[in-house]
Image 1 (cartoon, helix red, strand yellow):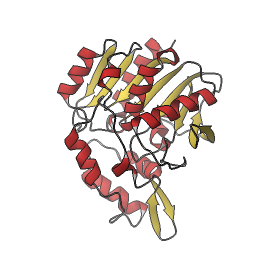
Image 2 (image 1 turned 120 degrees about the horizontal axis):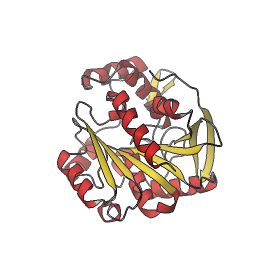
Image 3 (image 1 turned 120 degrees about the vertical axis):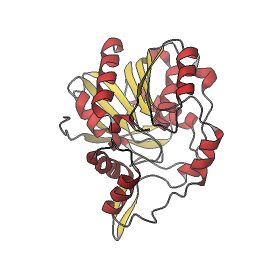
Length: 274
């Protein structure tokens, strides 16, 4: 079981924005940079960060428009990657381990392709190089409001009703911390509601094929975002790629099958983080 460890809170000026981040571990250890998914925040990595805090300097960013980071006029894979590049420069991170989930996985793919000299190894959680048009249309059409969430408890109950059979109770609590902010009269989102409509998802297939650093893809077997066929294509077309499918997990594999995810990530980091 992962023991809760409180992070320290910081901000850095990067690419014209104030970006918030959480940090765990020793400042002199190898950096492990974590990037969350669309609509979430750095807090979604709380338990993963705590697990690795004894070996790494763990840094989890709130990407632009999320959490405590500034909102922006542009939301795209390219702007997120540029923010990351500026942030790690500002923090003087020479070479680091990079890990991203979903939208953060796309940022991870883009950065690893564009800055191989800075990445020791990369892990991408349930994110393809390009989303299918139908899935993008689904994101565009989903209202980012709180019609059923008058309280934190309401949100957790709604998520629990729609979640997979393996999603543990603590995962809903952690998600609520990452997604929601308690305000007078109820709760509100911690991210810019315009993100779902305005975000521009880049097609990264051509760049992904140029990746030279060790990269691990972890897919949820019940995911609606990354298919088994696309993962097979990624394995074939990205030379250093390796992959693991956690068959009973959904999109958030590190929540649904935490012990298995941590074991796969730990073995991969240990083999390639030098």
